[in-house]
Length: 163
Length: 458
Image (cartoon, rainbow over all chains, first blue to last red; front, side):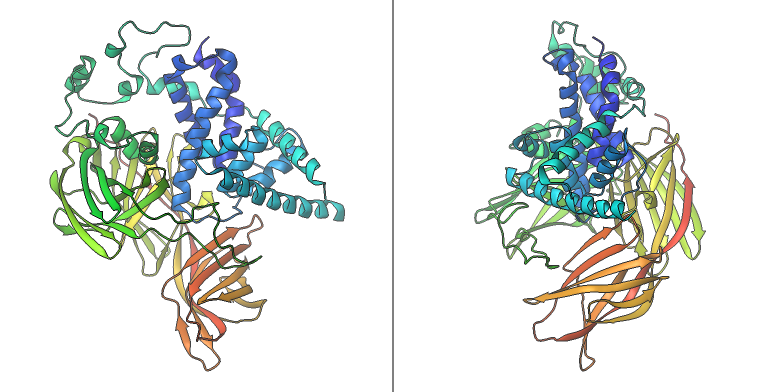
């Protein structure tokens, strides 16, 4: 089966993964282009045929995203919340949009573990391997991220009730 | 509030629905086809009979002189005499190469065997600093190094003393007791910048400086291990890697307000587009921003690319962008300039001062063991971009000026509120009653826009 046919079938989802990991459209495009090129060049190495394509491309893409995140973290100070412009990438319903807007406000090192755990259902050890960080770090970042997300959710709930 | 288990489920389901709603927005097929000359083996094709003679896909992307291309297709290596030095790196593999491959320019050089081998090393006790390779071209001079034998110190996520609940004071891991700097390049004093990370094979990092002004020259490194300092000298050349890049003069200046930006040149390399520019204004603060739309960018074909690496020495700045794909325009949306002020907050939680059209509130402060940190919130006044030249005052009016920032954490909220927590060293005997700031950063709106010349045709 042609590589590009499979890529087209999975591209929308892959774009959202890249945007979720990097929270920056230009960086997400870079990661997608690098991953697509790498996938094209190594397509003959894919085992398991077309059913394995999605998971295989996701791994390549996550690796590219990590390289960008690692480079970014050395250049910029790290804090737990980042600036975010809402409304740019809505979900299919208000609840998923609200969830994404909360996650998007997390800083890179917290958002990436949340995306891999809760969007892609990766086990914690696999997240540790994918991001090249210790398992303990994955656990502590997930804990911190959930604490912040619950707080944002509670503040959002108060706002909704007030209305 | 939604109970814990329900929240986790809502989070997971919500993120999955959001991701599944994605639609393609860029033409990846066109990009991939543009990068490759001919189809690579696909899933249904058989492996070629003689893989040694197959030209790897990545080689076809290079714009190389015809003789070199022919030589490669015939399996003949025509690289310079130090070619293949990357293969001599001890422990070459995913750890070292991943550090190198994060830098687009180094990645390209590594893949094309253009990193000059070195393997010079300095030992002091159990610690060894090893220079693995040098990359020199028209845009930069970069050394890749490895440090082994350092005593372990806490890493992110591992157990270490934890500040008290809600503490403003940070406890970062102790920095490694080794330093590397480029002291001279081509006989001239040089400034250098570096990055490193801890890996399973020790510290691996890069230290960089400006490009050689001549094709060959000497680089002098200072390596400090503990209190001992050594000097390493190496002969390097930018001839091989440099022939794939071109520096094109620009010499365009634009003035907005009282800030003049001059783009001196653009360097086109296979992996990056590097802009060399100057900013002329006393009290220039910088222009990095937490807001992506405020950062420098290259515009090309309706898309924008943002810098991966930037550094400066004096008035000169260099920014390396990913390759834009067409002749780009360089855009500086805004700059931050310093303005003298005299703002004083009594050390009372909630004390406020007005600056740049907004209100800066001292939300809290904390002192412990010779350190002090302040939590400032600023609201209103989009022009306010930070504070500098902080000091504390005691009850007798004595002023203690903070010469060095120990750390600062920062967060910009979606509603525009900015939170800044700077931390400083403060002698235990000094008893402050107020904190002051004598300079603020204020936004100056641009844009400064430069249409860049195209790279010369090869």
